Every structure is written in C-alpha cells, then in structure tokens.
Image (tube, rainbow, N blue to C red; front, side, top):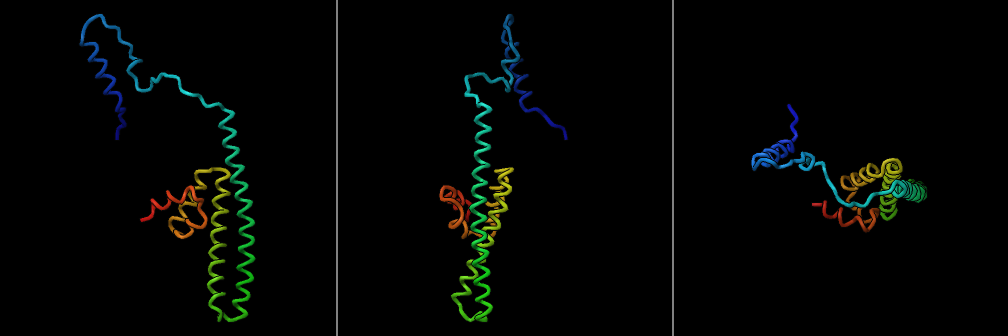
Length: 159
C-alpha cells in the first residue's frame, strides 16, 4: 500500500491558485509548507529537562524504598498470621479475614515494587504497568494505593 503525503495536495493547490490569479506575483513556496512555523516560542533549556528527568527518577527511587519497607512489613504480617492460622486450624474467622487482607497488601506491594523499578528507567512504562494491574485485577486498590490526585481519573475509567 502506498503512503501519501496528505499535505502535498494542499500545497500544490495553493501554489496553482496563486499562479493563476495573475502575472507578476512572486511566490515563495516555503511560505506554503506546513512545516514552516515562525514565532517566539519559549525554548526549553537542556538543564531543565535533565533536572526534571533526574528528579522524577529520584522520587521513584524514594517511593521504591518506601515500598520495600511496606513489603517487608506485609511479609512479616503474612508470616505471623499464617502461623497463627495454622496453629488454630483455621477456626478463627477474624484471623482468616486478616490473613486475606495481609496477603492482598503483600501482593500490592510486590506489584508496586515491580512498577517502581521499571519507572526508574522508564517512568511512563512503570506507571502504565501499575495502572494496568489496578484497573484489571484490583479495582478496590485504587482507593487504598493510588494517590488522591489520580483517583478521579481512575474512577472515570471504571464502568
């Protein structure tokens, strides 16, 4: 299948129209190209883009450290509650519910850790992985894990 430049037709049509209007007109073809943009636009300095990239990765690293602490706490809680659950032969329903919540917390911390490790190298990809998990598998986790500034966007995606 051929690839066409859709702007090519418009440029030729404009040039033909101006040429046919009268003799003696000076036509500058560069004025009709779509890529020719003039104006005073603010230029982004290289220092600010490097600083913002480093700052984003630094904050993802800090979040990863906090997530590791959260994961260690969740693992300890699951281990203790699982041992108590086995000792009591699963007869205590409150302990069973608490074990299920602790296991869910451990699962969330593992997913968040993976997403944050990816986000250190590619922020958009890491955020996409975490959003994908919470949208597909853990919609209740949006209220508990996702920052309040992003919760409204998540709620708009839910049916």
